[in-house]
Length: 192
Image (cartoon, rainbow, N blue to C red; front, top):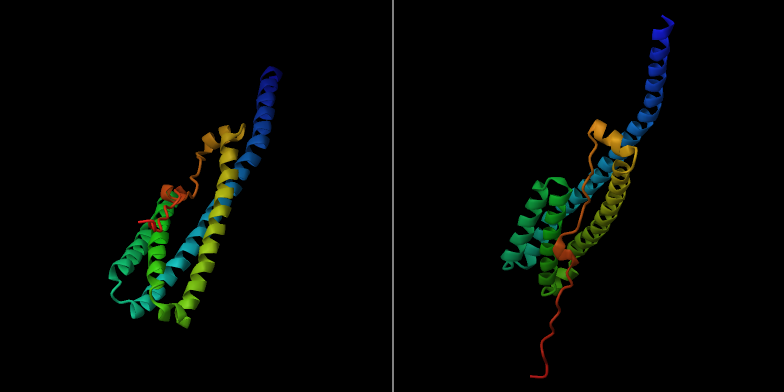
């Protein structure tokens, strides 16, 4: 009987030691994943705020620049794409498309001094600028949390725990490739 209890006791001690090592690592993964999810939710909140501001901005511009239908339609279409985008990568691409459409809208606004002087338009632009800053901060915070999580997934012994419990790397919220290109500015050649 003692011969059986000895190996069972050793196996029991090994299992307890493994449990003591695995449980904190597992709990750390749970915490890190929740931090990533919370940060991603903040990006969603700010993108939603931005999407809520855009119809008011578009309607204000429509009142002053009704013949700029193409630019206004581009903003509306880009907003719809962002609303339907799923996941960080698709949202990042849709967000860049919306940013481009908004930039074109702001170029159009330059042609309408009465619109730029409009108090409602100014307030909307201030809110939109504040929201853009919040989106940038939320993206930075999200990417920092993803970085912490991914490091834990890749490091030993976290890699073993991650594979045991199905934790995989998360994707970063990346800017569109076009955002890294330097825009070409051409003021024309005055020498001709």
